[in-house]
Amino acid sequence: MASAPGRVNLIGEHTDYNGGFVLPCAIDRRIAAAVGTGEGVLYSADFEETRQIDEEDSSWADYPRGIVWAMGEAGHEIGTFRAAFAGDVPLGSGLSSSAAIEAATALALDAFYGLGIRHTDLAVICQRAENDYVGVGSGIMDQYASLLCEAGAALLVDCRSLEAKSVPLDLQAAGLSLVVCDTRIERGLADTGYNDRRATCERAASMLGVEELRDATEEDLGLLSGAELKRARHVVSENARVLEAVEALESRDFDEFGRLMYASHASLRNNYEVSTPELDTFVEAAKGHGARGARLTGAGFGGCAIALVPEGETAELRNACEQAFEGRGFEEPAFYEFVPAPGAEVATGIEE
Ligand code: ADP
Ligand code: MG
Image (cartoon, rainbow, N blue to C red; front, side):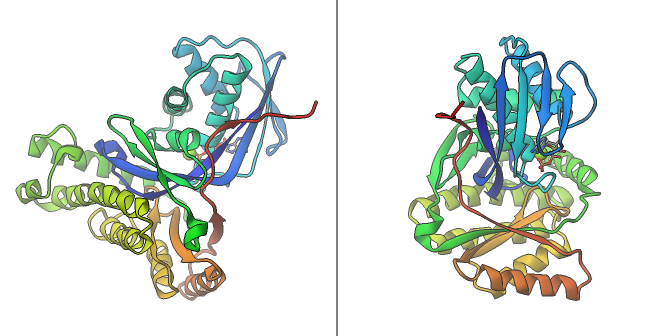
């Protein structure tokens, strides 16, 4: 049996597909996968239903099926087994319950069959399952975060080299809470908006004669104009902010870290143009209620925003935000508070 967490990205947005840096942390909501000998049955406690491994039905079961397929593609033939799943990662909120079920499945199978696959390689298998079996295009961040994060830490990921390093994030010692606001906005424009931003970044990179915008500098920006300039300005500055944010965390400087979060949000709103009135309203409410930093997280066009708030002041922020949302006729938001949690783990010491 293994379990794996969801994640939030603290800073580094729309940098992954430009070969840049991201800084997620795992959250204390997890999905567990139990694997045993049996004949190809998958059971979900949350959906209260049973599915067959050897079918394809566009259900939750495609995630564990995808893992079996991707493990086979990576040269690890998986025999017959049965498995059961249960968890509490919010579904479809942008907190990556999909990576959590993938990582839990992959690690449980790895343990069951004694494969000894490294966590970095399991993450690549999970990404392959999501991209090529389930058919959702995504970078490596979610799976890396779910498999490699440590308790009380964030994870700096270089999306080009796939190197990752743990960065201290002891929020308790700093007297801070990590608040997530789910705006519950249907991300209708998300796919077209996302594809458009990706294409513009590729154009900007080729105009600058670099492989990816990761390789562009502040000075290079002078050669661009229009949408290419705006998008590239975000990517170049955001990559720099991630590295500055890592330095800030390493010296426990949460004022500086928070400043970088606000700067990231401003750039996502003004340069990358992926914020919404709801996300902006949350960030403004956070600013007005003592948050050290706040920003949208995820691709934007809806979804979630985060704030670092002094412990004990989160209720005030929630109330203020709820009122502001109601006043503007927005959907009622959902709030979560998370502690930076450990990545995927094999459960030990389970009683028969
Ligand atoms: P997100 O990753 O942002 O939560 P996705 O749409 O990528 O949203 O993934 C959500 C899907 O992952 C669900 O529709 C379901 O198929 C699967 N999933 C998530 N949590 C569970 C769970 N506890 N049990 C079974 N399947 C789950
Ligand atoms: Mg997902």
